[in-house]
Image 1 (cartoon, rainbow, N blue to C red):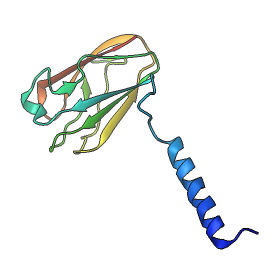
Image 2 (image 1 turned 180 degrees about the vertical axis):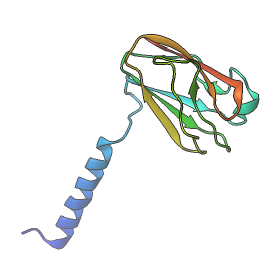
Image 3 (image 1 turned 60 degrees about the horizontal axis):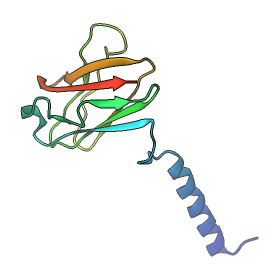
Length: 123
């Protein structure tokens, strides 16, 4: 049996290791991050950065709200893979979406309208 401090260390190491499994590493080529920038509702095509963003097939886009007010992401299509809608994204929070078809999609903020515009290309 291990002394008490060894058990605590091993438990901590196990918890840390399991936590890493759910992390998104910056070098992941399947993951593309898009920031919703500060004062985005006034910036048009510059509300999202990068814009446009290129995503590999079956890759994931993660939009992070770096503004101090809520926003949402709405695909600018009636049907198909570009027809999607997020819930409101609070400051500091994220919305993630995976695309399984090659497509070019335009999107906008559902809370502020087409004054905030973006585009992504799934290749």
